[in-house]
Image (spheres, one colour):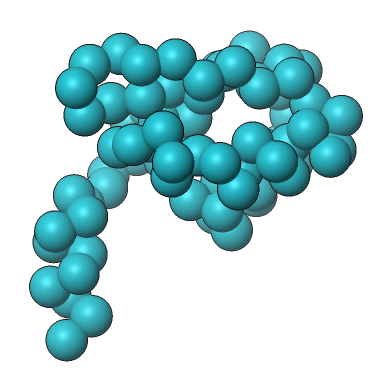
Length: 74
């Protein structure tokens, strides 16, 4: 099992819904004020593809805070 990280719980909602629909068992937990981790069981490569579509990042991935992403849109 591995984890997917999010800046806020609501950011994980769509991915959790999709994971449950595919038969995975997701468990979201708050690690700190600005970090949530989603454990997924069982873990396989389909999950990595779903993270690319629905958001979040894997431990070790580079990611930008939401404020920086909003600045890049303009």
